[in-house]
Amino acid sequence: MNKQETGVLSPSSASASAPSVAGEPECIWPAGANLGEGTMWSQREQALYWIDILTPRLFRYDPASGAQRTWTFDEEITAIAERAAAPGLIVTLRRGFALFDTTAPGDNAKPRYLHQPEPERTGNRFNDGKCDSRGRFWGGSMDFDCHAPTGALYRYDADGRCTRHDDGFEVTNGPTWSADGRTMYFNNTARNNLYAYDFGVEAGTVSNRRLWHRFPKPDGLPDGMTTDAAGRLWIAHWGGSCVTCHDPVSAAELCRIPLPASHVTDCAFGDADLRTLYITTARNGLTVEQQAAEPLAGGLFRVRIGSAGVPAALFAG
Image 1 (cartoon, helix red, strand yellow):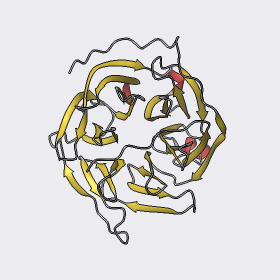
Image 2 (cartoon, rainbow, N blue to C red):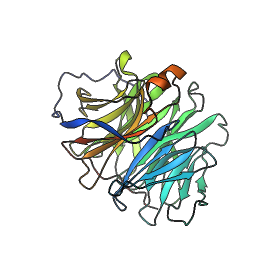
Image 3 (cartoon, helix red, strand yellow):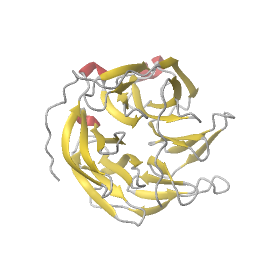
Image 4 (tube, rainbow, N blue to C red):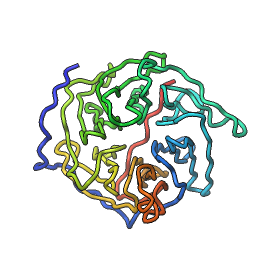
């Protein structure tokens, strides 16, 4: 793959309009997550799934009833997507891709590994991931200590094939795609690099990696992200206490949602009209003083947006 990294795209010619935001974010689940992540709205269940990577736990929130459910895992659970072929989820655990049946009775359900693609990289764990429009799961690995460039970008297919598409990341986050599906965005959080790739929709390939954006220093680092129906990118800021919305071409900031937590980790659109932005946060990395000043850090938040998101793509398996 051509790993060309051009300069940051100019933000001078934004084409997307700024979305409206109704009010301030509300904390709907003060879970105190160590590392809240993995927001995923289930269209089938009309419920929001999210995770605490490091504790590790999987959460389910039903906005219609307010019901909450929690599953505890034996190792890190790092990303999730809903399956098309059967109930339950495909997930990434510490070492790779697995299935988890959320419909199993009781609290004894266990994930089942499908593939562990990098047994030689013992200092790594998996991190963020999502499915593309063809139902292929894209997941990134990372150095557990967030320093070594040992992380990689993988594509896992429903037939069990796993392909490494890029390499050399310290901390991977994303991906998300443009409205036409022909650009994939992916972050190396530790280096404050938001990349864009040309994406082959039919073949499931990436090429022409280039630097799409970097956050100004006071704004923290790029973490999880999603795309709305207008093609705008919504990006969580680790260490920046906000989510920002960006033009997909110029990367110009269109709006900002402040949160009462330093480490904002991920976001996804949900509810029946896909106009609620659900946002996860983390307590990990905060000092004792910061934790006292940020009692809602590690909570799940929501805020209404004046435009809709898009349904999360399902895993084809």
